[in-house]
Amino acid sequence: MTLEVADVRRSLSDPRRVAALLGLDRGALRMRGGLAVCCPWHKEKTPSCSLSTGRDGTLRVRCFGCGETGDVLTLVAEVRGLDLRRDFHAVLEEAAALAGVELPPERLAPLPAPARELPALEDAVFDELVSPMLNSGRLDGSPTVAPVVRDLVARGLLEAARADGWAALPELGQGQAARLRFCVDVFGAELVERSGLATRRRGDLAWAWPRHLVCIPWRTPAGLVQTVQRRRLDPGEPKYVFPSGRRPRFPYGIERLRAAPAASPVVFVEGAVDVLARRVLDFGRSDGRVVLGVPGVDGWRVEFATYARGRVAYVATDADESGERVVERWSDDLYAAGAREVRRLAPPEGSKDWCDALGARRAAA
Image 1: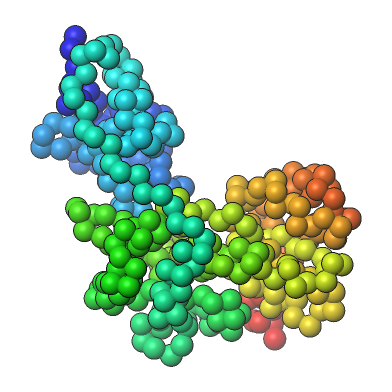
Image 2 (image 1 turned 120 degrees about the horizontal axis):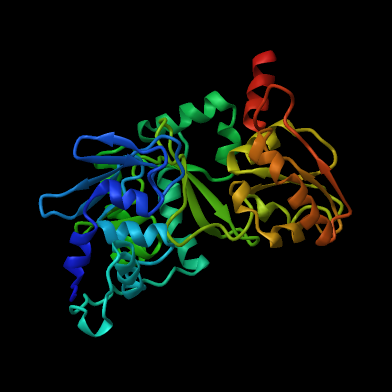
């Protein structure tokens, strides 16, 4: 049987069948015209990714949580850990195998030329590009940053966030568009796209993750902004995102370690928000401890442990199942990297994380 790309798409058009073949049917919800499954692009507990059959008879994929869209090949690529542009032939072969048909290589229809890969920006260029964005969104009294300021005030973290250069995007609307136009005018569309902060939508450049208003700069040991994490204020998922292709290479707060005395303890927590909370809780301590944030328990990298060489290290993960699960592994890595001593530092009873602990202390004051 001779198959072209369109034939492969048509052979995998039934939402329930595709979900079962890809292992996405667990917890799926039936919906009119298709199925809602847990999104493979972001972690979620409630299905928000719609699989339906389009008017052309092929599968349509749309996540109402993170905004990802595509067809069955897009979905296969994500579930199988492939890049649709770079690995197009492999994705097509995988889709054909799922459909239970043989795909003769010599009979393939002409494939579209792969899109040009945009190389990631060097840290110095990325730092230069995001500096105007962070400066224009500084946490002052302007109305455009008011939602982010209110959130940080409620957490008791505003001054700490200001000191670390946190910023805000305007809410959805013309303010965001104007901010993007400014960046494009100054740096050009290609550099802005290569930053991972913006993406092409129907050919036009737009902010990636436009509902994630909080901008959190993660730096290199020399202080350059290596990436900008974004946080969402409303209950939507995912809560935190990084630019495409720019996961953090260093723990949050690493730039403070250079100036710290050699005997200063190092405290590892989960994420940038808990770094700020832990700093506020530690204010006035005499041991000069440096708090470093890991981008989630699954974001731990073995090389992070080397920052504790010759120091006392604290594993201060959240007081939940995932936080407790990694204590032993992180401790082993820290000792192997030369930490002088490793101690567990858990949030106080009744608090899940250090932000909760700070809130409880402020409420009791």
